[in-house]
Length: 217
Image 1: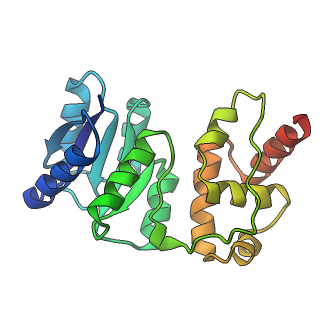
Image 2: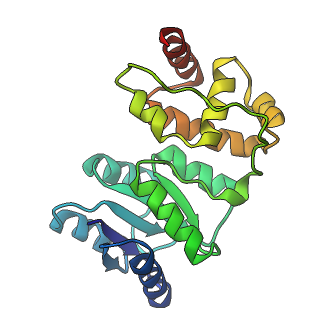
């Protein structure tokens, strides 16, 4: 059973999201919060919260520093932003803080349920509206590695694996964007998500890591 917190000061949206998740995710226990303080209370009181979905404009002290502290305090909980703002800048900022996904309120119920399932499975979710689908000419990244971080590679999406492959070859963000036919801002989002999942601090470490794995295959 998954335990999910929906935090939004708009009751109508909370109820709608609760109905969508209850219908789309079997045995999900849904908890509601109207402000950031209520989220913290629930996280402290509940034995294990699998996912906290936070409205970007929810009342309360809501800064990058505070979010970073909350993520550090609850490492077993995944956190996602739910917002009406689909700005690439906002999405990139959220992912850079360490959040595990960004859901836009204009997305359909099916898309939101899919996003939540992706996040619960350990992946980083980015709205599909940010990028065009990759053509079938790209080959999938082989991830048969013996490293203890191999699980992190399994959690990457197919698009992130394509980005990672080009990073390992020394491509810049602009070159990756051109090769994959996506926006440079979208590339930055994927790079940030990749580095967080692999536990590396910069592109160089990511490239060295993937090259060492490829060499061991």
